[in-house]
Image 1 (cartoon, one colour):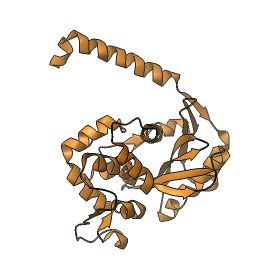
Image 2 (cartoon, rainbow, N blue to C red):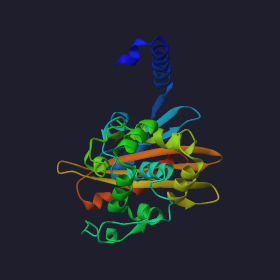
Image 3 (cartoon, one colour):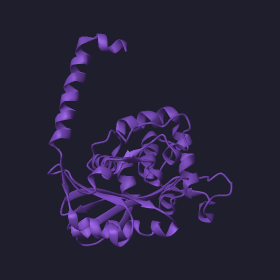
Image 4 (cartoon, one colour):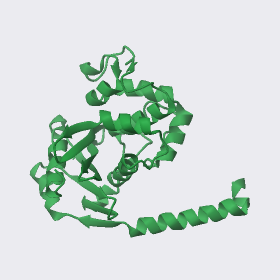
Amino acid sequence: MRFFRIGRPLTFIAVAVVVLAHSASARSYKEVPELVAFFKAEGVVGTFVLFDPASDTMFVSNEARAKARFSPASTFKIANSLLGLDVGAVKGVDEVLPYGGKPQRLKQWEQDMSLRDAIKASNVPVFQELARRIGVDRMRQGLKKFRYGNMEIGQIVDRFWLDGPLAISAVEQTEFLSRFVNGNLPVSTEATRAVKEITLLETTDAYELHGKTGWVFDQEQQIGWWVGWIERGGKTYSFALNIEMKDDADAQKRIPIGRACLKVLGKL
């Protein structure tokens, strides 16, 4: 800890802590009771968060769960793509990456794919190849720059978002996505533009919807994610949903619940 002996960095750190503490205390959380009904109707426990950066407000259902961390699973493909493109681990979203030739959980993953196709298919082995190209050191540095969840990757560069130690809350998901879409991450504009392009789900006259699902396969619990953002009326609203899942059928409930929440909040 030798750097604490120098006066100026210590002063900077003290100021930074004060600023971050002020920012955290200024943020407000507003429970939206109407959202609870959508989870109850589907028989699942979960949370939904919509972040409005203009008012620094989190509109939530189940605030306590919204602040609880879980493995990000395939929602990490957004950050993985962004970092991979920024450091040059892949030339662009249309460069084809190998899946490795081994049998996979889903047959559709057993083919080489570009990031453009792999993020839609949620192709795990292709994104594992991307992570290996990024490497442990650049990955660890990147997650710190992104302030992504607990920022812990351990030593296994192609499994940490699936098995841990990486973990992130729904609130942190929305904060990361808000920084990303508003150009507040230290990455190139080209990488930002490309990831926005491949995460686009829907375009209407009123809005653009971007998103990515995730599925935590754990022997003790399964967690389903849907995260993304809405661009509407010149403003951007990031969101995150997670639910506890008992079986494969529950996975189909993620997006419908999320869309219902977005409609109640006037974003769809």
